[in-house]
Length: 314
Ligand code: MG
Image (cartoon, rainbow, N blue to C red; front, side, top):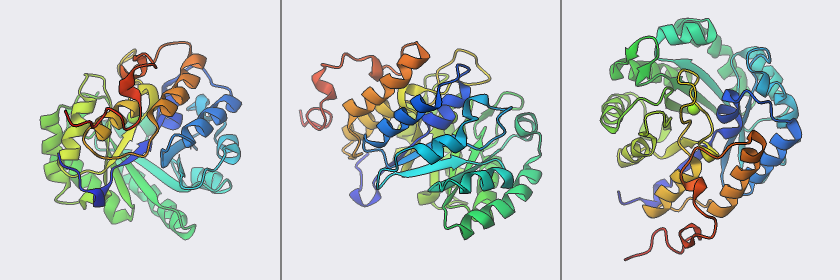
């Protein structure tokens, strides 16, 4: 892939929301805030910091208000929040997020089991949320889960995924993030999915969200980049897990996406050693090593020095 500087790649850091929501050990609010503040100073430009779901559903994110209210707002960094519905949006708006995200699934069964609503009902709920977010001047992203595989329905038809992605566009969202929620997809499936989605959604408005459950995440990121996708979701340390595969790897790791992009000659603006230090902060609290392989590389490795080796001509 030869990158076009006019279409720089954006990384959307999702660890504080998507990463932590799968962690049962509750992280104290002050530590989350310190961690997000550290992530904010790594060069990342977009960070999803929390979710305004009901706290009985995800106790880990019960401190959404405090987190959004108290993090440092580093200029140039957009701090996003996930909201499930209008009530969630209203809670979020009090604390001025920079962006809002909504979520639904391609799989009807997954949506019913996950949020107790049909896809139709989800989109009906989203109409006032998008209107209100727009009125507040906020960009809106739509997360679409189970775009390749579903724990209940198996393989998902890429045409069906594209149709639901298009519904998000018709709803008026700025970006749709295609999530392989259970991390079963392979590059060939990603190609087939994108073949369909690009017919219905403009490429600059497509993001990809891969999980590494079956070890395919970074290959899938590269596949998406080769198809022109320029927004990549990732999670520092590979935090995230998969609720349907206990013990499995999580989201694609931000540090590995950064290393890949820099090696392709796509500058990310991310300070990799600073990102690894930020990852260590939460790793220590969780008391286990990071999932990502890059995060386990000895810190004295010269290959981690910014700009020195990643893209060196041999
Ligand atoms: Mg995820």
